[in-house]
Image 1 (tube, rainbow, N blue to C red):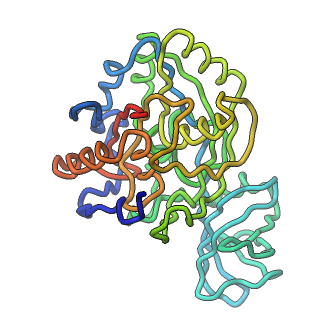
Image 2: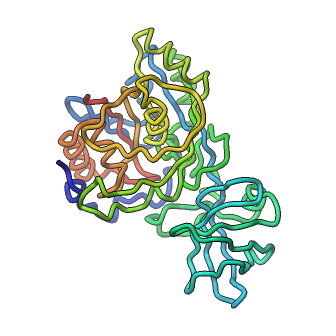
Image 3: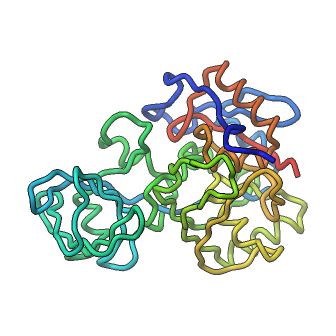
Length: 338
């Protein structure tokens, strides 16, 4: 039985990527099979079969970080977690004192939002107009907490996949950041098929696990959608002897959440799926993923997928070989061990 301490490791701070490389597919790719092979992400087309299906997460990162002032004059930082409808969202609010229900916050020195009921660590907010439109105009890209700088114009495009379509995420599906159009063209020319799911990544993806007993951890909720087109693509790939390759843990979570009955089903739902070693994967055969935080649920997921010892060896190799870690870092290609 694994505990939280089993997923800890020492990472030199210099390996935490603070900015993207000049080209998306210039990053490194650690091919984790029976042995470890150092490759370039641009080599991906040589590592997959024409029968395979790549499944991308087409969520679009919203400009979810806003700065403002309370009625008392105190400074606040607002990070939108989820948009409920045109004028309502829930958010984390950083301030010297928590705002009171019914109070207002002036954001971007331009518009006011009303603070509603508190929901755990989040506050409900009512916006005066369309939330997405206001965020697009006045918000900032919500870079992860381990990137120690403010978002700039480069992040507006590079912290977004080139196929991002449906707004709603407050963190990027980072494995997809490595794909540029020339690479996608090469994959398609080879015969590799593509499909999309939507899973809106929440800020909870960075939430640390605080209990040694993993069964006590409460996962954050994420919204996902699986289309009939994607289900058909998966079924056709299976029938042709191809493999289902999830691009990122977000795509994997959406596919596996929608496969709990034993087969992949269409529809939109919410999931709190927590994948730890011992989980039986129902749909995904291979996984493209970045390197994850110590003691994180995502590290537990990749250990469940590829095998605990194999991932420990892969991470040790990546640190020795000075791979770049986390959102703007390098990637791995994994095979399902179960």
